[in-house]
Image 1 (cartoon, rainbow, N blue to C red):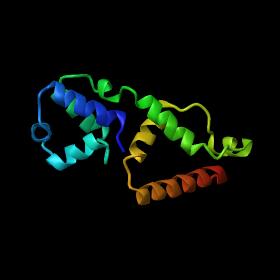
Image 2 (tube, one colour):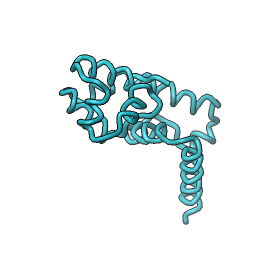
Image 3 (spheres, rainbow, N blue to C red):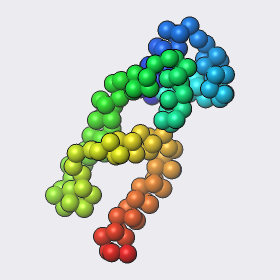
Image 4 (spheres, helix red, strand yellow):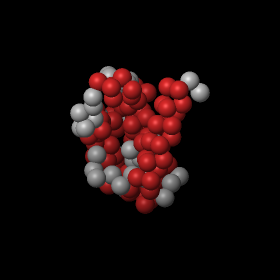
Length: 133
């Protein structure tokens, strides 16, 4: 799935006249890893994104332009079950904080199995907090 990050990676690589191999070499990663970033198969973590931005001589925020809409869609998908007031109270589904956006960014880079594990752990922690453990 292509994303805005994928788009900007390809855009700035072309603007700098670099090949995928040249970018990968500068990042000290495999070309296939960088290719996955450009095709949207995987997404770079924030540290890698900052390194890529340095290769392209741009601020890393340039690589994140337009991601707000993607995150809004992802959050809308999460909340598409029309949570009840009880759900809102239980899971505190109000305005999204920067921390929550960062967490969502991290979770989106996990495999489906890892996402399920994270969700189970998060629910366990919420239950422990509610029960006063």
